[in-house]
View 1 (cartoon, one colour):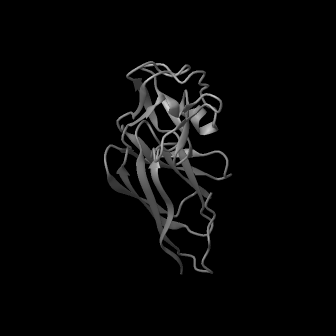
View 2 (cartoon, rainbow, N blue to C red):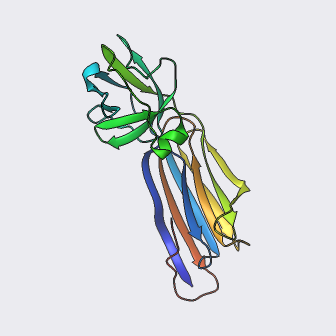
Length: 209
C-alpha cells in the first residue's frame, strides 16, 4: 500500500489571515489530518511619530512581530497620524520584520490595499493587537476543484491552544480543502497528514496548493 506518514503540509507562525490548503484525493482515499494550534497574539508596539513614513504610507518598527491580517487599534500620547482614527480597527499588512502598513479591513489587508497616511501626528503612538477570539478550522469538499462545500461535521472553533484530528475515509469527492478563518489575534498552526492508498499502487505525491 502507498503510504504517507506524518507529512507536515502546513506550518505557520502568527497566522492572522484567511488560509486554504488544497489536496487532490485521487491518490489517497484514506487519510487523517491533525491540526495543532497555539494562540500567539503578539504584544503591543509603541513608536515615535518619526517612525511614520507619509510618503510610502508605512510605519517603521524594528522587530514588530506582526503578520498580515492582524487586527488592532492605535492609541497615542499626542495626536494620531492623519488618516488613522481612534477606537477604529485596522489590519496589518506586513512588509518585512521592521516595516508594516495598515488596511481598513481584513479583505483589504489580504489584497494589499493600504490606508493612506497624510501626517505623522505627534508624540508616541501604539498599535495594540486585539485579544484573540475564536478562529476556526474546517474541511470543504469538491469534485471539480473550484466549487467547494463545507463538510458540516468537520468544522472546529479554536477557543484556545490544542489539536484536532479530521478523519477522511473513502470520500465520494476528488478534492479536499483545509480552511483557516481568523477573527482576531494570531495562531501558530501546523497540520500533519497521515494516510494510505488502500487500492495499492505507487505512492503518490499529492497536489498541495
